[in-house]
Image 1 (cartoon, rainbow, N blue to C red):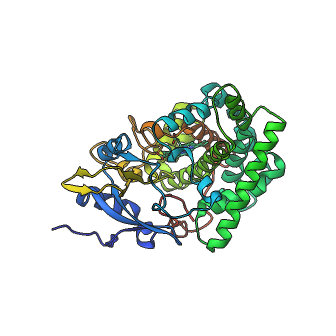
Image 2: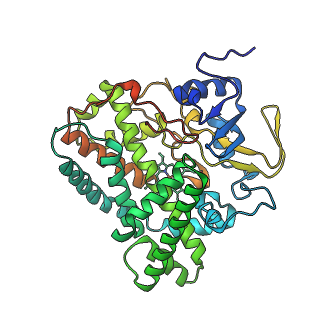
Image 3: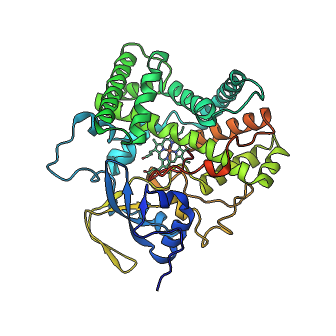
Length: 402
Ligand code: HEM
């Protein structure tokens, strides 16, 4: 007999209020009682039943299993998908094998440690400027809207090459895309169409006027012999912008929430403001304890897979629940403890295998620098709302506070 803790209601709906009220209880329940379980992902207008794996070893295994591919995931055969929707669904994490290898190697080149180090100065300056603009200790701020979002969005927009004239439009489109269908389906589609248009314009402009940015780099890579057509270029820009800032600002805001919840851990950091290794370790602990992405996109089984005494039928979707793996007691000592000095910390917050996060080092650096600047400037930072008001949003694959 299995016992369901009071906060776990079956069937589990990721995206439901019960799940959001206590994700760790659900992770524990799944790991212990249903290591290959079935949950419903609820995206508002779209819902989907998926198999989830929640143990660390299983998540790692499935992320390297050649029988589970990303590209077949999509509409059933015969269902017509409008071109703009197809485009925004053609991101790098949806590609497999040779196509994935080729695209990833084209886009990975600019993410060198040297370039990222260089960007550190820019992130510090951006963070300082944002806090200057917000004034001293004058009153409450919205940490996401007023600080984390503008800093991280500016970094990725600069890197990719989104000019000043397109930034607001671009950001509105990405926000609408990422937040799914909380409004109407028509509004969502209109935003997506606009995002596709503005991205196409961007690619056309960079062809005409090359600059020192990633879009130009990708166009030049094409001209050096490899071929990225316009459709691939547009999809690649989505891959980078969509993956590159919602995740990172949530990493920053989740870090602040975790640190304010654990004052002893924050004190350790405050006592060592220049200890880069400790701040790095703290950022990784946030990516373990409160990862912005709780699971990757579902993969599709290309054949029947026998696992934990069950059969995942060919065509079914399987999702590794990274956030559950990150609290697996088989791997992490006292997994429910937030410990900024945790070592080793082989968490899966940035994924694993061929789809391991391309921007992991950039995101780590951005979060570290933004947090260092924030706590340096505001050593007495505290929550302006009650802790209960800072509830998790009921989003299926994100950990983000309201
Ligand atoms: C995957 C970019 C920040 C978690 C990816 C991929 C890209 C990307 C392009 C797809 C890689 C592939 O399929 O080969 C970026 C950029 C970031 C960023 C540019 C910031 C500047 C983050 C953050 C997190 C995160 C902050 C969470 C802590 C992940 C995860 C995957 C991933 C879990 C694996 C997804 C999968 O297997 O489908 N990232 N990312 N990323 N990223 Fe990031």
